[in-house]
Length: 319
Image 1 (cartoon, rainbow, N blue to C red):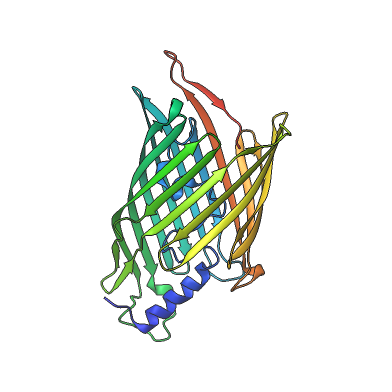
Image 2: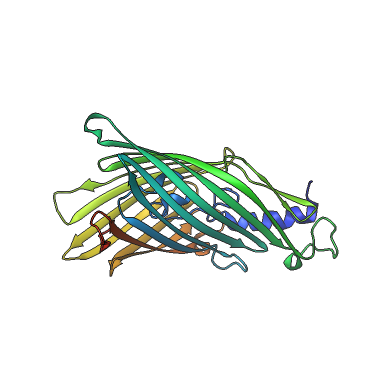
């Protein structure tokens, strides 16, 4: 059912705030540090590494705007063997709040990993996830200019749908490339009795490479990502640099999104926890001052279940 003119005004206002962080990707936020939250947009990335991988991220939206909102992500994944086959499993929770709207997603993810090529040095992961989408809008906070707008309720409106996502991830030595489609079912979520929230399919392509330099302590990690819903798009080109020596690990870099933004980030590994902070400044639209802050935490843990009666835990360094 079509929304009223007043409802569309409120929706358009919220979307304008989202432009600093999203490529009109419906309820899917864009994290600047996309390489640390890879399972957020590609289910084939679960079990990518041998360790148990735990990640959390917090992002603020356009600074200087009331009710601009925040985005929270938390996920965990791990790999395991069944005979000679390798598998990955994971789960995530995501909450994106802006203005009167709230978008939540709960996902259970699985990936089957195939070794290919001479010496089986190539790995192809085929992943899928079952997603629960929970959408809500607090009509009591909406300014519709006219009271008792019949097209927009004055109370909390909620709706949910089951969804699915699929993805592929190719890995070879220090190179990896992923392709995924979120919201494969393109569901329609009913909000209350008079509004429908259309969820578009979102396509993602990403690639990354680790370059070992002549200096054994210094590593260069270029990466790129492209996202589109076949209407709007966003591309990111990122250069990361890491220095590691005597158990000290520092990393820094910059990201450029054409026609969108420029960002810088800096991080370190502290007691086995990878901490990264970034600030993204808009080069178009709302301007540099209306940027966003983002903090991401990552922790990896070795799980060695090979010895009887023992479960050896060991933290590992991050690149």
